[in-house]
Length: 312
Image (cartoon, rainbow, N blue to C red; front, side, top):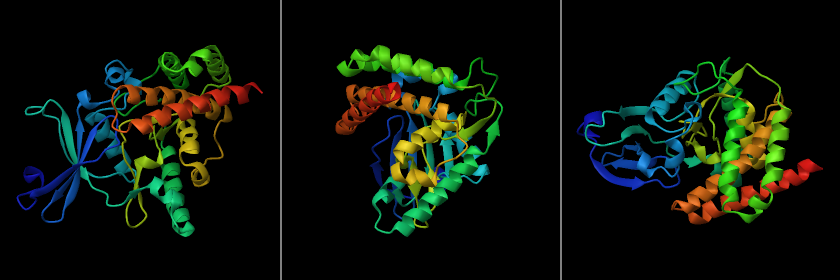
């Protein structure tokens, strides 16, 4: 803190902010009233460490390099995200990268779901909708992360098919209902995939944009956080996630030009992936075990409901 901000910034309190599954986050408060956030990218503290060690470079969503590149990309295009004050990648003293980032004093967008003033809600979610429209309008002829956007050998949705198969295998080992319906779930996945037509334009998406990944300051200005997974991809991947995460407020975020076949495919993928993700958090000692259990239970039921409804 002293090296970055000067001797007047004496640390008075450090508080860990719980909830993240991939990096460790702390709020740092100084005696002069200044606050900032410390991000620590320590793979040993990542609940998805096993997957991160072997994942395809196109699907990476962890690390200071991606954070730095995406922070710069978004900031340059007027998409609000907390400012990066300092990034240390030397690893001379510690075995991990860490950064000091702007502290946005406010609440998450999720806190506004039950706000007493509907005018405030409308203003916030309309602003967020405009922000996302602007972000998704940044296009590329290739998909991928900021550090890897070469010519990819397969359509981007096929990466999600492969991922869904891996997640189904994991979930079927731990949930009887998934194991009993494994073949039906796979058949539905393949059928949904078969209806997707080729595409050569991709929008810039966050990648996991729930209302807990949007901070709102006292001026009702939304900021995107946890941006490491951002990159160029089918924007239906984002919108199918926004649809069930923002619930009734998705009406402010929706896009009428989306491909309905991609929307169905990605929604099904999300339910499968979040089932497995919840189970992994549960099995790997995540701090909020009740949340992990609810996550797996809810999305497994959504996936099973999906195959029943789709069969009709």
